[in-house]
Image (tube, rainbow, N blue to C red):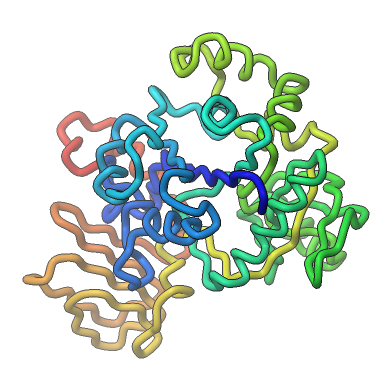
Length: 353
């Protein structure tokens, strides 16, 4: 890599489906879920550190509520490298504002990479190899490279990327032109996608040269780029809430995809712990637990002085943290966000958020 590579960590999310461990000022990316001793944000930053060749080339974009937490989590990151959004407007404004910042401080020929703060990557060596390949391709081509996850089951919870012609091959890594992005499909369509072998899951990770993406944003999303160019983050209030997929990736003709397999998991809800941690008698347990005939369950407690006793349960998630306890069927964890909306509307219950 001959030019500066600037990884940008997207760290503004709430991670509500990990309530009650995830709270307003302690979202999912601040949690340690994999037993490593580091939070998801810390693991993401250290995963990118050697690729960035130092902390001075890593940026984190986050919310006002979480900025102090980012500083505490990443004390070696220069404070000016924390970009604080005045209000969350999804990924398109975040990517655009960060790209303009990189243009100003690193130049239009810098290569940027965008990475969610709350993902798990199992194979660091393969991750670095893929990123270096993507960076070098973006250096030599007008391209917006995205990473597609090799699917291992017909998920209805992810968007999909369809690959077209091969653009290039580096060792055993193929880079394809993107034919189209597809939103979360139903089960029948997901199975059809898997059968073709041409689809991958949309990881939300991107690599591109700054000058290239700003030109594409000028073409396809001027309503986002122009205000941010003119007013900087002061323009946020007037921007629509929109993802970078909708605003740019589904429109540009420069999208390319690398299908990857480096032990990725987006850790969407509590069920992810079954993929990360070792089960004890079919249960995943963290904390003080007494089990009488409870199976295929997740029991997680941060309260060392307390005990959880379960009797005759199956397929449940029980989480105890501070002043809140969650009990949910494993098949209903997607509804945690819905239940939290009820909690948010109760003025006497804000201390539980």
